[in-house]
Structure formats: C-alpha cells, structure tokens
Picture 1: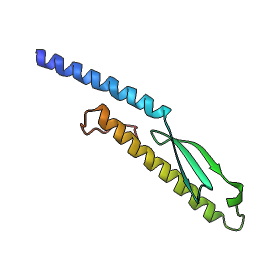
Picture 2 (picture 1 turned 180 degrees about the horizontal axis):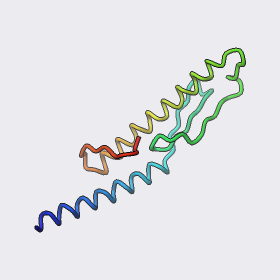
Picture 3 (picture 1 turned 30 degrees about the horizontal axis):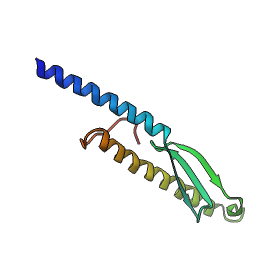
Length: 105
C-alpha cells in the first residue's frame, strides 16, 4: 500500500512540474523569419502565433503568392523552433521520460 501512495505522490509531483513547464512555454516567445527578414513570425513556446511582421517592400500586388509563401515559411519555421524548444524543456522536466501532453503542440 505504501508503494502505491509513493507512486501517486510522484505522479502528482510530475503533473505539477509539467503544468509549470506549460505555463513557462506559454510565456516564451520564439521568432523566425523568411525572405531575408522580410517576413517575421513570433510564436509562443507552444507554437501559438503571437505576431506577424511584413516589410512593406515585399508586398507586390502582382505577386501575392510570393508573400503567401514567405508568411507560411516564417510561421512554419517559428512553430518548428517552438516544438524543438518545448521538447527539450519537456525532456528536462520529466527526467527524460517520453511524454505526450494533450494540447501541447
């Protein structure tokens, strides 16, 4: 019976550490750009888009596809960096145990 109590306590401690990590990731901001910095995306550590900056020079009414591609590239790279950042943080918080958290990336 004591082992079950210890296991439950460890589970609660791990859950608290994971919650702290999620809160920390929500507060982090990660940035990536495309087109030599013409389009910049900023996301949270969980990958939620916070800001998108577009240099007016890249806005060409004759070529909207180029701007669309730059936006997609910048956002995708920022989200990829956030995913890597979160995985690294998660590995440290869980002692290297593999975990999948619902709603996290």
